[in-house]
Image 1 (tube, rainbow, N blue to C red):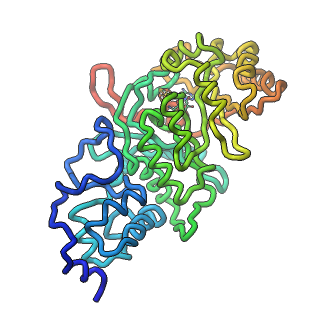
Image 2 (spheres, rainbow, N blue to C red):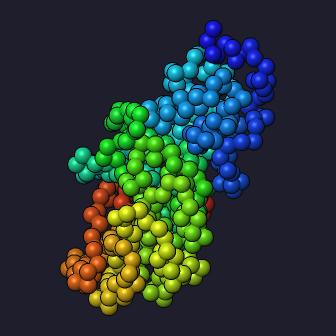
Image 3 (cartoon, rainbow, N blue to C red):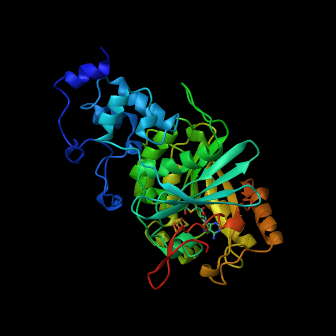
Length: 396
Ligand code: SAH
Ligand code: SF4
């Protein structure tokens, strides 16, 4: 007799419908919830531990949870029927209670440099973008954590269009799995590691405003991608950054600094009023880093605003004493950002880098990728509301 049939005849299986599923599973933030007509939980939102707990009433053996989890995150199946380790009847039974839901890729645009930008529609109609950036044998996925951003940085197109809801863990990892799946059939076995794949949380949204889901998604992605190949970029939401210290799996940290002092930072990043530089830097000084790891400081260069040699020297003083590398990003201009948001001349960028290098600060200049498809940093907007409240598809 198969284990499935023994369970079917057993009395432990609740005769419940999806609507009265037990209240175990990922922690929920009510405001972050997508509006879904389907009450069945999405299996992609669960860590393995949560999945074990959640599935207990419906599966015959504890190891079923692991089989399902591995099928989802190692083989990247897109529906329960793909979990062929389970008998057909068990899959059909489970489908009454749970589902596998992934955002639909509604458009993908390829830039001449090979960068692909994907526009995804979520089940409640919200939209997000993610970018796949190939580089030789490596690929970097730049993914979104929110369907917009409420923080309103003056240089950022996502911020210009305003807030959108938080993404669920499943919606976050699906961006990677879907873009990966377009051309990549690598299956990950036992100790799973997808070679050459990097993930950066640098798409739409502020990851630390959606820290619970981002934390889970990092754990899920870590099934196949080493944490050292993931980077979370944040503006520095301090309570969440403090909590990140105790995350079970921690990605690398990139801090969006963009100005060397509070006066200038507050002008372009309103959040600096709540979380000023002094507090941010103090926390970073006690932020534990894995051996050999550094904090990346992202610094957008804006012409005549923060690109002077004096600003470079102030930046050096700010990061002194930290294992830091600075990534200089000449701003990507955009019509919605206005005339002040223009990049410096290339010679000014190099001179700024030189000031830092001379003082021993490791500094790189970010290469522009994917700009023809508006897939460059800060240009992601997905569907946007125009000032009259209409929603217009991106880049039409
Ligand atoms: N909210 C997080 C992550 C998303 S923004 C953060 O701000 O860090 C991702 C990156 O794009 C950040 O480094 C941000 O500073 C950068 N960015 C935003 N607008 C940009 C622009 N116009 N040009 C270049 N980089 C930009
Ligand atoms: Fe939000 Fe980051 Fe854009 Fe600022 S730079 S508005 S925090 S997405």
